[in-house]
Amino acid sequence: MTDTATTTGPELPQRTRTVPSQIASAVLRIDPADVVQKILDGEMLLAALEVFTDLEIADHLAQGPLPLSELAERCQAEAAALERILRTLIPEGFIRRASTDGRYHLAAVGQTLRKDAPRSMRPAVLTRGIPLWREAARTLTATVRTGRPAITTKHGTPYAYLAERPERQQVFQEFMTARSTAMGEALAEEDLSEVRQVVDVGGGRGTILAALLEQHPHCTGVLLERETVTEQARAFLTERDVSDRCEIVAGDFFTGVPDGGDLYLLASILHNWPDEQAHAILVNVRAAMKATSGSHLWCVDWLLPDSDMADPGLAADIKMLSLFPGGRERTLSAYTELLNGAGFTISATVPLSAGPSLVMAEPAQQ
Ligand SMILES: C[S@@+](CC[C@H](N)C(=O)[O-])C[C@H]1O[C@@H](n2cnc3c(N)ncnc32)[C@H](O)[C@@H]1O
Image (cartoon, rainbow, N blue to C red; front, side, top):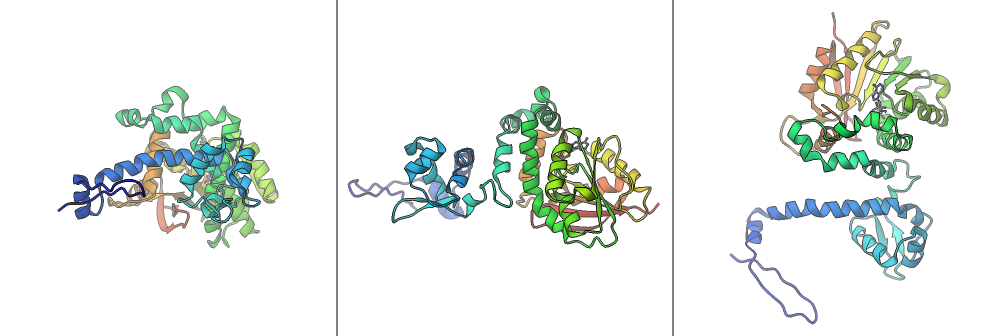
């Protein structure tokens, strides 16, 4: 069997040649080398996405279409180079070029990178650009050799790194807000009629807590966070108009967790830590619950499948591996073992449309 690779063009002769790997692809319907090439090409696509974000192209086009020269001027870019970036992103749905006058219009994917987009992806791209995050990806081989993030030797853990760099902390927390907004909305749909106080442990700026308090006006909240995040949290909760029902506590969930809550929230917390430290956080939550009968725990994290099927949580798992010593996404079995070991039993799991799952747990009967 032969396969053909053909180059056509008005002034070029046609050439035909046999490409062995394409013979395989005819059988497998996919050329294995193409899989590798696609991943390699993805790096340039990612770089183009960063240019699109850094030059704020989505915001420049938000008010209406622009010709290349005008867009290049507003972005302070060289027009021909910019055109090549734009050309690459047209098939990805970021922008389109009008066939009539050649002006660039913002398309659906590009819209998500506007600063004012409701769940803007801009903070996610900017967080990826934080030097520590970049270095974590670049040094993954060294991490895999030792099992411990290579970055920690030089920079310590990501939260210690962010604590010393307020601007990067701001970017990271904006990313958390953008990422957790949909989760907050989904959690707010649950029945909280029996809940009076929600304690959000490691709550970031309080994105999820604000959604719960907005939807359930009879509830009050307590946000426990590192001291370097509380100022941002205060501003955020004030902007969301729930600060009068919310206490912000600067603290460390390894030292203790505020008591008196009917509902404790650990959203995207346990996946940052190895089992031993995740256990310590859960034990502190369990101890805080002792003061209130009937209180329960909600955890939000990816639940990896037990099988080898593809899952978006796998990318999150590699991110945890590269950044956090012992950080990992867990399967439901691993999550169950972790919670049982700290005195909880899982009562339900709810897949959230945002990707991760809600794991509902109760203190185990003594
Ligand atoms: C991945 S973010 C999740 C934020 C929030 N729960 C959400 O889902 O949007 C983890 C948060 O844990 C906080 N954190 C890390 N170590 C902490 C500690 N020892 N005590 C309290 N908070 C901590 C970080 O500052 C960060 O905001």
